[in-house]
Length: 215
Image (cartoon, rainbow, N blue to C red; front, top):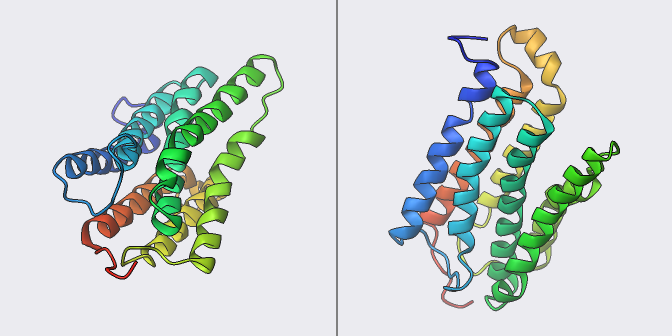
């Protein structure tokens, strides 16, 4: 408790994520990001909107930690993961894949969270599908970069995004140890900041890259 706010650092550390999500939405609307999303598959608009709601959902959860609020924390995160993997598949393997993958993957991501919530209410919460939604996109990104080539420059920024995400998961795992060492900042707080760093790198990549003419 700090300044009358429960779980203060876990709450306020979501603000950078929300601000970056808003920046992403604004930049998409202003056509300041380099991508080739089809009009019927607004991949990056969906992604950055979900980033905003991830931050809001996380704030709500840390102010009132329950399974109900955790549901609204995890649901937009699943949308972020599925949107990103759709975008990368399309950029590496062909633009038409957007129309094939986007909505089925969104439903899969949302379904994994709904499945967890239902099993949680039955007293046997099963996170396996949700964990698959989190970690399968990472594996797909690595494989894509190994076997194919993006139609855009700055594809190595994806490695930085993965590095930030890996550090975020590590700090989450070492949550209590980090809190004990610092006495005021937990690993979970650092996880939020590293997630925001990953979104910042994504924005930088999308804003500064160029399409390769020979692709």
